[in-house]
Image 1 (cartoon, rainbow, N blue to C red):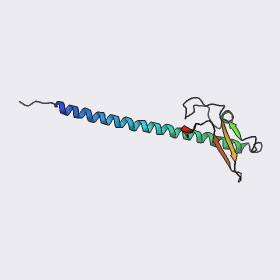
Image 2 (image 1 turned 90 degrees about the vertical axis):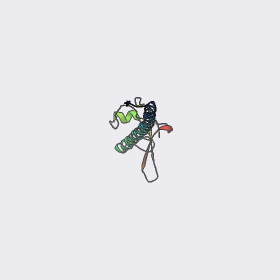
Image 3 (image 1 turned 135 degrees about the horizontal axis):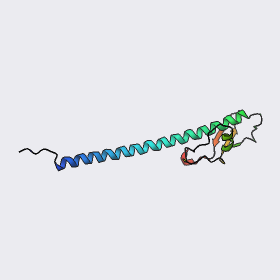
Image 4 (image 1 turned 60 degrees about the horizontal axis):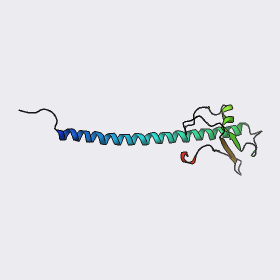
Length: 122
């Protein structure tokens, strides 16, 4: 008489393999999600910095090195250069009180740096 079915050892082997695959997939997915969050944060920061440089360029007649050295996020939103949505780095509302620092080098080239971002998220 032949028994049909799987032995206990075979079932345990399949469960162990499935468990291992589950762990590997979970770790891979977690790393992918973290990398995606980091990329979204970096893209958001770059967009805010670019918006500040565009603002300084649009208002170059009234912007000198002194009076446009810091531009608030609120100003960028009011000018329509960025949308007032969530901060991709914190997943909270954008803090409109944060500023973007605008500096000029000796060649007159502008450099914009978003001061609101924390070092960890850079």
